[in-house]
Image (cartoon, rainbow over all chains, first blue to last red; front, side):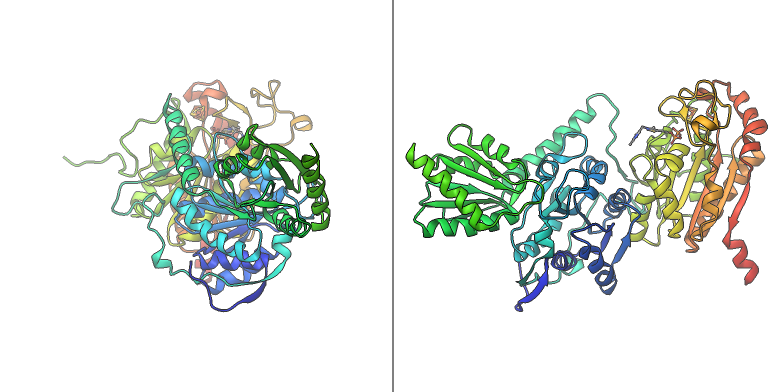
Length: 359
Length: 252
Ligand SMILES: Cc1ncc(C[n+]2csc(CCOP(=O)(O)OP(=O)(O)O)c2C)c(N)n1
Ligand code: SF4
C-alpha cells in the first residue's frame, strides 16, 4: 500500500472517511449516531469535492438498503454506524450476503444492550462475527487498534469486499473514532484502476439482462447456493487471517485482546515485562476469519491465556474453542462501556501469572 | 398479413405464475410495453418486491435486483444515485409500499428521488395468503380481519398516493386501475408519464394501480373486476393527484 510522505494529525472518524474516499469509495449513505457522527459529517463535506454522493437517510434501515442499491449498480459504497444502528441494518446485511454484494460497513461499538451508553465497548463482537441477521452467512470483520491501522484497513476493506463479494465490517469503538493520532494516509486510488464487475445492474444494453437476488425457491438450489457461499468463506479463512504478535516468543503467559482493548493490553504487557514477567500479547486483527490456527499453535507452548475484552467475555469463547484444552483460558471481561487502565490490566495479569507459578 | 398484436420483447417468453384474473399480469405487461416503446430496455433497472411479484425478474428482460420487503424505493435510490441517467423503478404491493415500507417510500418521495414507484393496490397481502393490508377497505374481511375491517379496532384504510402527492419532492402521483380496457389504456399512459417525469429529472413519481386479487377476495375474476368497478373505485378514486410536468408546460 502506497502512503503519503506527510504525517498528519487526524481524528479517527475523519481518517475512516478519508481512507474510504482514497480507496475509491464515492457513495455514502448513513444516519447519525454517537460516537461516530463525525463520519457522516466528514463525508457530507468531502464526497462532493471528489464527485461523490453523500445522502443522509431517514434511518439505518433505509441506509443499508440504499447501500444495497448502490452496490448493485457497481458503486464503491459504504455506510457507518454504531451498535443500535447496526442492529437495524441486520436484515440488509443478510441480503448482502445472499445477494453477494460488495459493501463496507463500519461499526463504532458503544455500550449496550438497548441504548446503553456511548462509551467504548466491544459488546457487539458476537453480532459482528456471527452475523446478526438471519441465515447461514459470514462477513469479514477488521478490528484496528490505532489510527494508522484504521486508515490501512479501511483502504483494504473495499478491495476485500470486491474480491469476495461480501460485507466487510470495520469494528471499532468510541476510542477509535474520537482519538486523534498522527497518520500517513494511503494514496488516492485512480477510479479507472478499480476492478471491472460483470455482475452489476447498469442496464442490459447490448447484453443479456441480469438478476441480483437471494431467493432460490427450487428444492436443493438454495442448498447449493449456501454451499457455494461456504466454499467462498473457506477461501477467506485460508487467505485473509490477520493478527499481531507482541513479545510472544519467550512468553509463558499470553494476553489475547483486540482493538482498543489490545492497545491497553500492550501497555499492561510492557509494565508486566518491566517487573520481570514473561508475558506476551496476541492481537487478532481479523475477528472473522478468527486466527484460530495461530492461537492453537501458541497454546502448544503457552498454557496460561488471559482474554481481555470490553464485554462480558465473548471472544474468550473463540479463544477457548481454538485452543481446546491445551491451555487454561481465563476471561478478564469488562462490559458496560468500561475502559480499565493499563495499570489495572497489569494487576490482573500479575495475579494470573503468579497463581500459575504457585500451582 | 398485418400483425396487429404481439408480445412485447421486454417480457421474456416465460408464462406468468400469477393466478387467473390477477392484475399483476396486466401491470407487468403495461410496464414492459412502455419500456419498449420508450426504447429504454437497455437503460431500465427494476426492483421487484417481496410479495406476489417477487419473481418479476423472471419475466422482465431487463436488469433487476431484489429488495427486502418494503425497501424498494431505498434500493432504487441507491441505484439511481450511482447511475442517474438510468430509468429506475420499484414495483411493489400495497403492504410493501404503505405498511412495512412506509418510511422508505415517504422519504424517497420527499427527497424528490428521480425514481418511479409502481404501486399495486389489491387491498390485501396476496403472497402470504390474504391478510389485512393498510389499503383493506372498511368492512372487508381478510384472514386477519375475519369479521371485516373495523377502523376502531384495525385502524383506517390508508390512501397513500394522496399523501405522497402532498410532498414537495413528488412530481407525479396518480391512481389508475386495470379492471377494464379504458382504464388499462389510461394506466399505461400514466406509467409512460411517470417514466418521462423521472427521466426529465422532475422528481419522484408514483403510479398506484387498483388491481384484482380474485384468489384472496374469494371471487371469480369477473366478480373481482366488478368489485373494483362498484366498490374499490368509490373508496379509492381514480385520478391524477399531482403532475408537475403539466404545471411546468403551463408555465413555459
Ligand atoms: C421483513 C419481512 N416481513 C414479512 C415478510 C412476509 N411477506 C412477504 S410478502 C408480504 C406481503 C405482501 O403483500 P403486498 O405487499 O400487498 O403484495 P401482494 O403480494 O399483495 O402483491 C409479506 C407480509 C417478508 N418477506 N419480510
Ligand atoms: S394471490 Fe392475488 S395478487 Fe397474488 S397472484 Fe394470486 S391473484 Fe395475484
